[in-house]
Every structure is written in structure tokens, then in C-alpha cells.
Length: 274
Image (cartoon, rainbow, N blue to C red):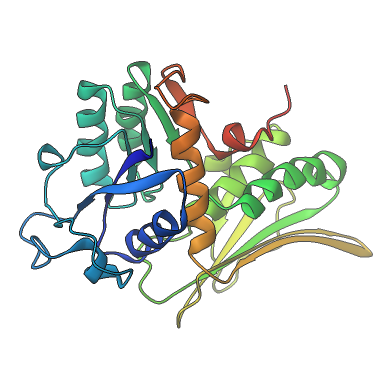
């Protein structure tokens, strides 16, 4: 029996990509398509909204109107907090791809992991999560002798900067080097900035066009440079990863056997080194 997946933020770019990924999946079905309250899409056929073909499933504006096994949430911080609390109350696993949380938001969000399995990731693509492991290695080998800069680019509609993925990359590097990213991050430069301090980690942001997502981390040493980059050409890579995470949270027998806790995509992919 196919897993019933609910998708919030259904009217957005990732909601549409998730609908396509679910249409291609042989393991899961779209069980609920959820948009913000008051949206003009409420009541429309979910398949016609995304162009995947009529499904006979009406778009709704509340989780109370949904029946599902697992929720995938790519919406906005306030909505995601409310949705996570709902899932915790009802014992439903949740996959979270929303970014832009404040530290207080994230603390409140993760408090729910004591009650349900929760997968929170800044990026669900296989390639990006492989890059996290490569960054650990590069930071361990070169980090003390190199200047480290992170450059990211996204489409003109992205509202947060730097991207959640860029920040996660910075956190991986900083933690490997024993640094506190909040203390060493430099977000953009202008004017007479003075010489670069070796322990800092620089971030540069590009916004424009329809760029799906590009990230590069540079380790710049005297005489050589190592660059670890990832470029996404389709949101389907993120959607398929989020669906993979949703199935993983349900356990191998898809009966909710995964223990409550905070997981990320590297747990799902088995990339964490103990």
C-alpha cells in the first residue's frame, strides 16, 4: 500500500516539484495538497494546479482537512512551526525544507523531535549532502592554512540570504575547525575593510534570473586553491530527496518505526561517520 504524503506550500515551486516526484514514485501518493488560508487555489484539483493531470484531490488550506502518514513542509518559518507542532500532537513524522528560521524558531521547532521523528535539512539533494562530507575533509586538511569563502546564487524570488545551504556549509567547515560560525562569518564586504583575517569565513550572495541553486566553497591557500561546488539544474533533485527522507522516517516497513528524534539528510543517506 502506497504511503500517504501531505505537502504544504503546495502552490510554491517546491510544492509543484514534489507533486511531480510523487507522480513518478511507485511508493507514495499525494494525499493532501495544502496552501495558505484564503488562497484562491482552495478547492481546485491538485493535479490540475501542478499540471500533472487530474487527481480528484482538492487543494485544502488546513492540516485538519488532511489524512496522511507523513508531512513534507516547504513553506515559511511561522507556518512550519505551527505544522510541526500539529504533527507532534498527532504523532506524524515530518520532513522540513523551510529555511530562514531564527535561532529561537529553530529551538522551538526541534523541541518537537522528542515526540516524533523529524528530518530538518537546508538541502535535500544527494549531491549537496555529499559535498558536506567533502567539506569536512577539505577543512580538516587545508582549513588552518587557507582562507575560506562561500559563494551562492539563487533565483530572483528567494527571500532569505545567505541561503540555508550556504549557512550549513559554513557550519560544517566551522565545526570541523573548532570555530563558532556566528563569530567568524563575514556577510559581504564594502569600502576600506582592511586585510582579511585568516579565521573568518566569507559569504557572498547572488540573486537573479531563474537560478535553481549554486554553491561553491573555496579554500584559498598560497599557491593553490581547492573549490567544492554544486549546481542544481532542477528542483526535482530536492523533491526526490525530500520524498526519500519521508519514506526513511517511516521506517523500513513504513509503519512509523523510526524513533522520535532530530535527523537530517545525511542520516537518510548514511553519510554520517561515527
